Length: 349
Image 1 (cartoon, rainbow, N blue to C red):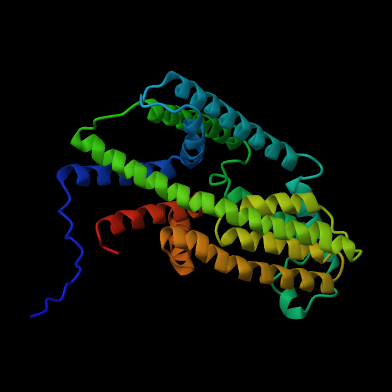
Image 2: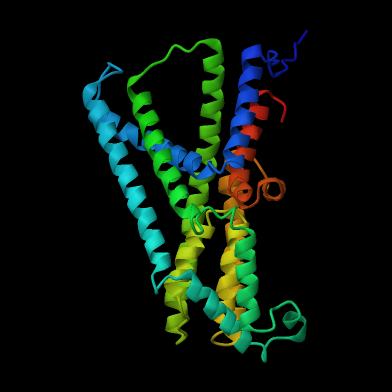
């Protein structure tokens, strides 16, 4: 008599009181972060924390020891944290300075796009003109109205810029301090603390998988876009204005899944109209081809990391935008990845 072996997933134990309490506190914390505009601090702190943990193994090889509190390793990681925080702060300051300069001014770009749309009305089809502002002044007024309406959500606009920058810097410092602590401290957690630490580790892992994957995708997209704008078009004798600004914006908005591509594509196609309708169509075709490739890349990298389809992320982003505005779009992929990790850990999905 032959026995047929069957593989069954071991049933999950019911969640303990401590786990339920940790879930409740995690939900409250994530809501609190969005409600009180602390997302920049959270993301910057997680970015530094995860970056240090990625680089630390290379340092550990330089300082081999069996003692978890090795001072040499502590100093090495501490110096690494200072370097990372300093570089990120300088990069952020440089990006802000670039967008405020004449070469990268967003105001100049908006004004240029408005003028291009007005000058291109004679060559655009009627059905498209019905959806465009009638002139440059109207375009500027609509852009100003939109910015004024979303001023509370755009934390880098006006007086909120200093506050958001301070949050980012404080978040990076906290992330660095936690990273140093992890290098030299081994905790014996009590049950509730252990449950909280597990939630934090799961959220940090979701952040790492989504954000670092999206950075790679944005960098690849920016490389292809820069090649087209700065190499292909000039070789054909076509020189678009504000190329550096468009490349920088492509990378920044590319960090937002799906929505970022729509923003950068619209900007590039409109600016291409300054040359001719043919150039605009060629730019659109090139970008469509790039993003078809990027769609599969996105599905492979981000979707593979969190085991989610593009439509799942879009629904999450739509719901989060309706609830929290623009910050909700940024937070949606990370929050969704974390929720899915929790469900997967319980064997529910």
